Image 1 (tube, rainbow, N blue to C red):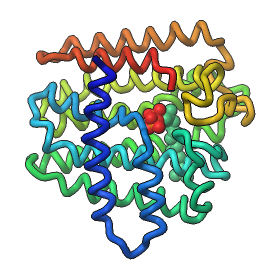
Image 2 (cartoon, rainbow, N blue to C red; image 1 turned 60 degrees about the vertical axis):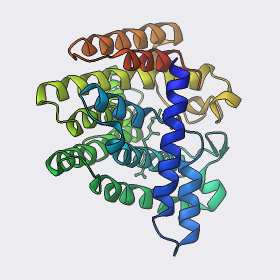
Image 3 (cartoon, helix red, strand yellow; image 1 turned 120 degrees about the vertical axis):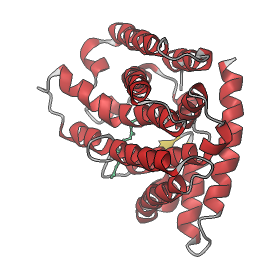
Image 4 (cartoon, protein in one colour; image 1 turned 90 degrees about the horizontal axis):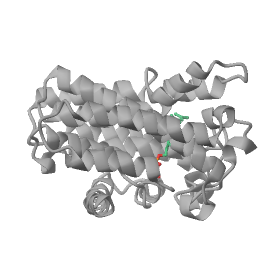
Length: 291
Ligand code: GRG
């Protein structure tokens, strides 16, 4: 069930992303090609799917939120392009293909990330069919989550992490670097549908729990996953001497931990009146995923 749900969403999101990127202009061909290459490449689309599922759960008509969902995926894609750069994680492969800087060169990859980030806000701001006060609130949530108080802050913690850092610092890093975009996906779905602040904060809690579980599984896959299925080399944390919760506490313990956070995320869904089956299935899928 969840596979077909994700496939249906992927097809609709990919065709919308293709249109959005094609409309961005033709003057600067190379950077647009790099954007296409980095966005339309088989990503799981988890963040936009979460946004759209929360939107529907809170009574929204899914078509109106699609462009906003694409904007969120563009920001996620930018973060991956920049994360792969030699000055960051220096990864040669992403989603089974040479990473953006390997295919287009470092300067174009840098600008590609910048372009995706900037265009994303333009796409989000142009959302039609939803009251503008909700769109403004959602844009503010998105920028806070992608910025210094969110994903960028998490990346800074990651870069500065010392061996003597407390486990809590690692969890703060997970919460921000990975969790912030997942959390904002859930919150924005509710905001765009006009849900009240209480439901928005429960959706945030769901996203935060899911985000920590997601990063723990990501770290486990980096230790034990299959490079071909993952579309990138395994063992990069070890290669980069990267301290992760899995390195510290071991795979078995961390699997249990990811399950605990996923269970806590399920509990949040009990506060919503509508059908949460798809969201439960998505959370279970993320816990069991092998890529
Ligand atoms: C601004 C220079 C500069 C860099 C930004 C913020 C940042 C770099 C990177 C953080 C993004 C990052 C790599 C977070 C880790 C989250 C993660 C596990 C990403 C993979 O997400 P999936 O599995 O990927 O959803 P797909 O390929 O399916 O979209």
